[in-house]
Image (tube, rainbow, N blue to C red; front, top):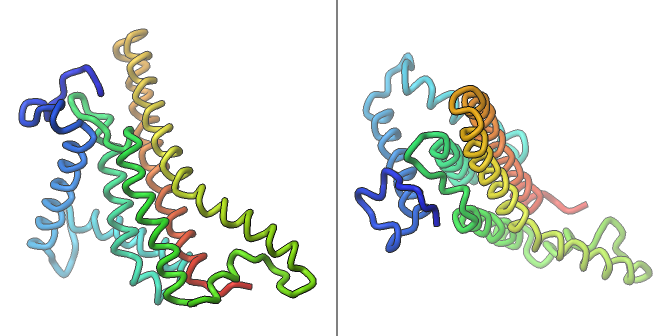
Length: 228
C-alpha cells in the first residue's frame, strides 16, 4: 500500500479498494471511452485520434499475424490487443503525478498472465487433442528414447509452469524499479534527473508492454502450431 495521497483517493477509500484495483478500473474506463469516441467519429480518411488508434491497432495485428499466422491472428487479436493497450495505459499512469500504475502491483500482472497461460493450453488441446502432448516430448519420439522423452516432458512441464511467473515478475519488477528511481532522483535533483527518467520511463513503459504482448503471442503461437 502506498502512503502518498493519490487522485483516486478522493473518490475511493484505498483501505477498501486498493490503488491497483481502482486505477485498473480507471485504465479500463479510459480505454472504453477512447474506443467509443473513435468509433463515433470514424471517417473514410482517418485523422486525429482515429489515425493514431488505427496505427496502434494495425501494429498489434501485424505482430499477431507475423507470429501466429493470418487465421489464428484474427482469433487471438481481441485478447492480445486488449492486453497490450491495457498495459500501456497502466504503465503511463505511473508517470503522471497523483496517479498510480496498476502494473507495479504483482496482482494486476498475474491477472493477465494466468489467462494467457490457460488460453495457451486450452487452445493447444482444442486444436491438437491428445497429440498436444507431443509439444512436451522433444524431437525424438520412440520406445528407445523413452528416458529422454520423460526427461524432456519434465523440463517442458516445468518451463510451461514458469511462464506466468516470468510474465508477472518481469513487468512488476520493471515498473516498481522505475517508480523508486523517480522518487530517489527527485530528492537529489527536483527537476533535471526526474525529467530524464520520465523520458526513460516512457520508453520502458512501451518496451515492457511490447515484451509482455510478444511473449503472450509466442506462447499462443507455440500451442496452436504443429509439433515437430
